[in-house]
Length: 465
Image (tube, rainbow, N blue to C red; front, side):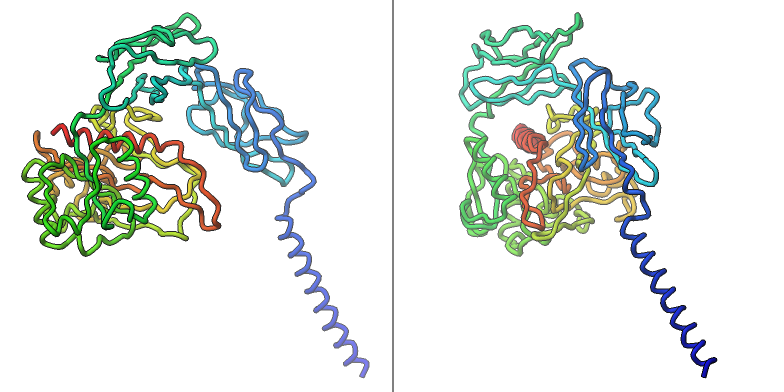
């Protein structure tokens, strides 16, 4: 009996020990094994004496430097809480042109920080008759489009410059903008020229927005609504046409450019494949008409015979509400080698031949209908794609300097004349920022101006062919 009792208590002891070990492990997991009593904050961050704004919740440090600052080699001045260090150490000159990440460690506790540094533009704003210009500090250009029939010969720009900067001609002076105008920016004894181009829409240009709804007011997809509203606000000759009207024999002879921006579904609607529709659009091209196909509409190049059969976009996908996601990176494109192409004129770039279209932190559905190279389709690279499709690949993802990875923007055909089709097919081409899956409105996309300008340039380029 005593032996049995001893065995019983031995088993109880083992069970209690196991429970204690599990509880201890759970407590360890709850704290992550860290000494939470040791803070790991950055108390102060400066570059050349300029204090950064620190968000302790997100770990984001934002530094805005004066115009003319060289941020390629700066030793930061950082103050940590007592006992904290950084990895890597911040005791030497660092290039802050791109975001810089580091980790602050204090005991077993750590926090990650990202420093984003921007240099002030010399020109804060440039407006004429209340219309704001697009200012590109990399290409040093000032560009704007004024309403149709505006007299360009005696316009008075209102210019606001950054502290310590002067500009000539000065703000409020009447200037003839019939041709490009050079503005001299001077700061700290150094001068640089910015070129201002002021234009008006092409007179008499008729652009038709193509859609599946019977009328423009019947469009329900918000991306399509936003795009069509922009077109009607900026092109006096804009009109709406439906697939049904084309099927029923609508006259297309007085239209210069037809733009189909289809964002509603991955698969194109059956009406687009109706022989009466495809034949009418093929004849439209043959007779000098031009097509702009964006988002999922890029797939239409196959049905219209713009590419050989089966050579349309080979990588088509995307989310639809309530699905979608927020990415911490901005999405952009590389058009390296095509910087001089008219459709990229005056875009705000982050380096030569590269521009962002979708800002980090915006909710996105990633509607994509592009050509994926080199793994799929047997194209191997951009040259192989050009040879097999008869098009010219103009842009890829931002990382792709050789344009051998993706075909995100293209024009057809690949000849010296009659380039009358443009396709824009990457997920970054996003006109409307939906609410996220939790119903929270997305932040505004600061790069929407690039999307608008890319579209405007494409329409004007096609109309000029």
